[in-house]
Length: 149
Image (cartoon, rainbow, N blue to C red):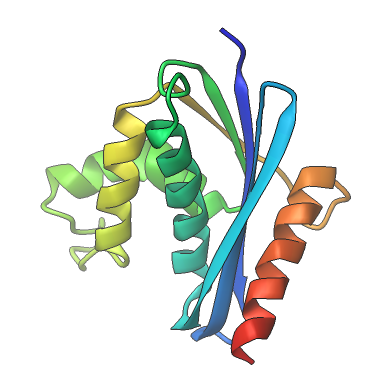
């Protein structure tokens, strides 16, 4: 089965402020783009929303859910959260190491549910480094932000 490649990005102007997210899903020789945004949000929420929307597409597209996925993301927060930190957060009742509530728990729960049902390899990429599809995601994100400014 052919691997599906995903790129995601999220951000906002001000934190909180108007935000956007963008994704590119590359499968079967086609690159499909999708984006969205919110009037008042945070950078971390938009990074999470990008990953959630990307994995939702994989989950909901016939024949995609069984295929391996490489998700390229420029957010260490999301990559480390889903591949490492989340295990302890759940074991501690959604508390951080310093016993504070995990921020964005609602989105982490959505991402965890999607991720656990798919074969996802999480790959961190450097943002604003000229990586073609990451740059496209950034532009999609900026275009969404502009809609709210």
